[in-house]
Amino acid sequence: MMEKIEKYKRTLIVHTTPVHKHPKKRHMKSEDIKILERMEAEYDARKHPNIDKRYLAPRLHSDKTANGLTQCITRYITLMGGMASRISTTGIWDKRMNRYRPTTMKRGLADIWATYQGKSLQIEVKIGADRQSDDQKRVQQQQQQAGGIYYVARDFSSFKEWFDNL
Image (cartoon, rainbow, N blue to C red):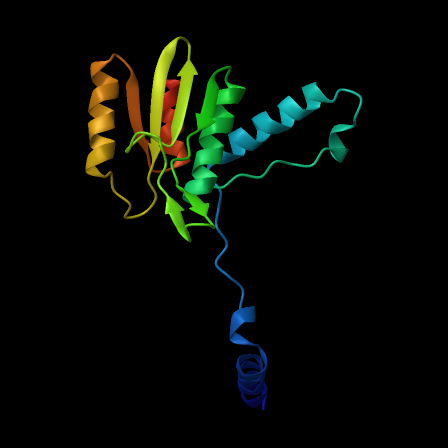
């Protein structure tokens, strides 16, 4: 009898739960992302000393997308006392011409330009199977020949390890 009840429960769950409602696999944040979030919380507490820490909204980060990883990197460099800026080289939609106008920026520029302790940094963000283009490889070579530092970031943990050893 118990066996029939268990089988009925399993059947009921399968047939009454929509496919899109099944729980997703939970992503565990790396320790380095947690460190970044704690740094953000400490920064916010210093910036707003009159507000109880319990009422400050937490800054949540993820390095699973290119945008998320870019944000993690720029915030980390800034919180460490450097200056970092995201560089966007996308074109502009022109309604009159009904097409994109190409950017006037040089092709292959890295996603993030930063200065840290007097060093010029260019950081290219690549997620998953994304690879550097020939233009990006050329910019990397030019940056390194000029005495700057170039790094290809694939996740926040490896970036943080590289950055902390500069």
